[in-house]
Each structure stands twice: as C-alpha cells, then as structure tokens.
Amino acid sequence: MCVANIGYAHRYYASFSQVDMQPDKGTIEITHRVFTHDIEDLLMRFNGGPVELTDEKVESFLKDYIIQSFAIYGTDGEQIPLNWIGVEVTFNDIYVFQEAPLSEGQDTLILTNRILMDLFQEQSNTVNVKHGRKVKSHTFQYDSKLYQISFSGRSGDYPIDQ
Image (cartoon, rainbow, N blue to C red):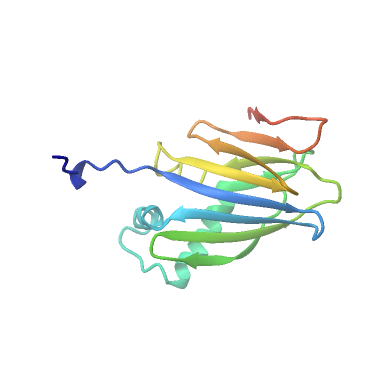
C-alpha cells in the first residue's frame, strides 16, 4: 500500500521563458511563465506580508523585477531594450509579456535569466529561443551568467563568463 505524504512533497523552483525571433515583424517576442506561489513568496519577502496578486502594485513590482532579472544582448554586447507588454495572472501561473526590436539579419542573442534566483538557490530558468522553425534551449542555474544562442553557422551556442 502506497501513501503519499504531502508534508514531504518536494517543491521545485523553475521558470520558463519563450523568446520568439520574428524577422518578418522585426520583433523579439518574450513570454515568461513563473509559478504563482513563487511570486507570492517573492512579494511577501519584499513587502513584508501578503499582497493581492490582482493589485496594480504587483504589475509595477514585476515590471521592475523582471527587467532587472532578464536581459537580452546583441553580439556587440549592447543590451536590447525590452518593452513591457503586460501580465496575466492565473491560479497556478503568472505570464509576463515583453517585446524588443529585432535588427535585420540578427540571428544571435546573448541572454541572462536570473528570475527568482535571489530568492531560491535551487531555481532553474529554462529559455527556449525560436527562430523560424528552429528552437534552441538553455537552462540557467544559480551560477549561470550569460549564454549565447546562435542560429547562424558562423558561431555556436556557449556560456559567456562575465
């Protein structure tokens, strides 16, 4: 007879980001998916108590937090400005939407993703980058810095120490 003990359930810490390079539109579309309970923990830490997730202050907080935690750079090392689109809160997940310009012929991005790593050392953040029909992924861990993803034959995918 097997009985699951909820008290010993293992909780994992993860976020997922989808980066869609849209050459036809000249944009990079970004969607971050984080677990609602992790954002609740983050807000409690920064605000000293529970915060209603539908509160406008939450979107303002997340906007600042995500901008500090996730960035995209071009191969020249310049950070690509990410425009804030909005937030969608569901019972289990929070979706954050951003957008950035994509330069003509750009097929390489340098990424960093530190979302929730200041709260959970076990946090892992998977980023999927899509360019046309190709998709490449990288999972950032606590000690990860920058990672290059390229869809050209000239350069590959590799970590960048900084």
